Length: 336
Image (cartoon, rainbow, N blue to C red; front, side, top):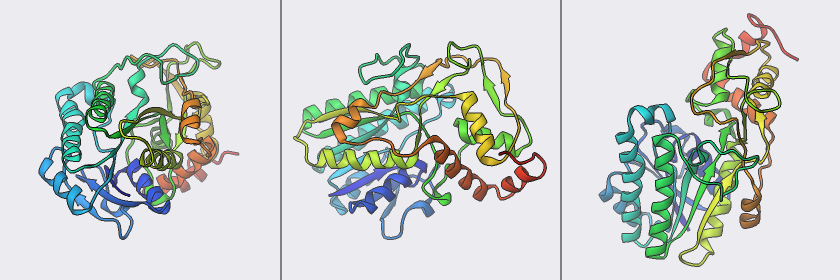
């Protein structure tokens, strides 16, 4: 098997590439490097620089590397930006996926793993989100992910592809500091940034119907995400044509925002309490995955805990911001 990993120079993508190659699978990275970093691609793994909107380049890449399966992670992923630029998001995420599938079908690619998101669920009013929970996305980003699932599924039915859509929950951590997330768009790096700037982390609302009043989320280590891709790829490689899977990729355990900010303080050595500010529109009180189906289908479950996730993310942050660790011990003070 040879797997083309689109977005394979990105944060999650680089972890997927590493996990696939360590598992003995052949990988080819396809990335436009708009946010990806070429240095993340392991030695010996081919890197093709290009857009998923370039059908001719995709077709040549599939043919030249004898690609048999695709893990599609490339795309735009910022909720706020998607509200401001919906046409851009639909073009990159939906038209880009259509172009990719068109080239894949034309060249005989048989397996597609699609990177989806828990954002497809919107604001679910349930204790655990199952794959049957109604999908009511609340942003253009979430809409493009749901549309992507429909498109992958339809192509699979029509052309005999085996397909899977993986709905990620809240990803953090790093397998190694050099693979750390360089963006500041999710809770963990946002708290790191506040702490190292000498500011208090912000909690958006503390009056939710949860045990401590703050939102509860399911956080999963990026290494576990990568291992889930390996398990999915191997499942599809032996599956019948037309097989379709939709799977939540989470730990199945909730952690509140206050618990997470306290844990980050403890791990990093800072002692800066979080400040509560107004709620953000559209934030659901609780979004936690049911991880039952993925265990049944793949025999996979998350292995890393939240503390290890935060510690590995912090090691990456310190590598990118060398003064951060020193600041914890001097200007702010050490934690436990």
